[in-house]
Image 1 (cartoon, helix red, strand yellow):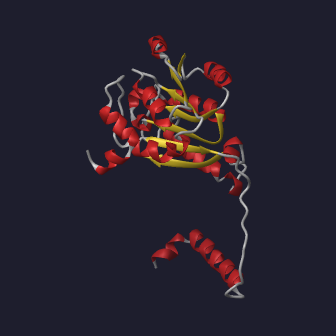
Image 2 (image 1 turned 135 degrees about the vertical axis):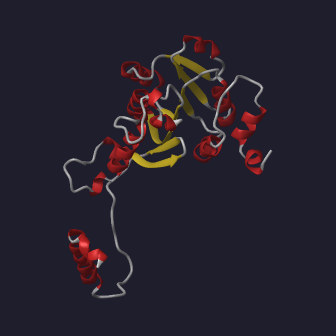
Image 3 (image 1 turned 45 degrees about the vertical axis):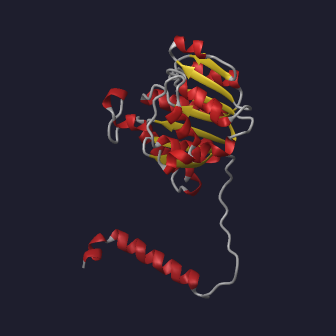
Length: 250
């Protein structure tokens, strides 16, 4: 057992697991623990898409503690038999938006949503758009196995329109919409509620919060009286050079 495994309770649980089966990429455990540790021991509601054999639901139940309520969602009706104390299972297709809206009404609010479901592009996007609003302010949305955005069998492909990775790239724009000078990029729900994004290999984590328009201020005394004029001059020079790219090579 290396030092990382010895200090990460999720990886410890996985390595010692003799309960229901689960399948995980080993580098996910550091990501989970980094973003979920603050929820441990609290009254927390966790929703995970993709029940499979039920092992990860039991892991979350153990990790978050006795106050946690864990919901699993899967299209396989057999998963309903995996219901146990503090674990409830819903059966439905995560690509069906009407089902997702009904699910949202049933659950109410959640602190954490984990998408480890079907991994197809339409499923991932529909689930994010319908379930991100379910999160309370300060909540966390984690989607894993995002590498399927590059796999043809899941509807993916490098820089292919409609993949979840390309969708995430547009969300980066949306976070910055406060600063946009284009009518094609305006402040919307995600600008006001998506505080940040963390991109890892195969995993993206989204932070939910009430986001206000950024405020830029100055404190302290100026060091140079002509600083603003020099800055404007530098900007004009940069603008000129951008119009005359050939000058950069002389």
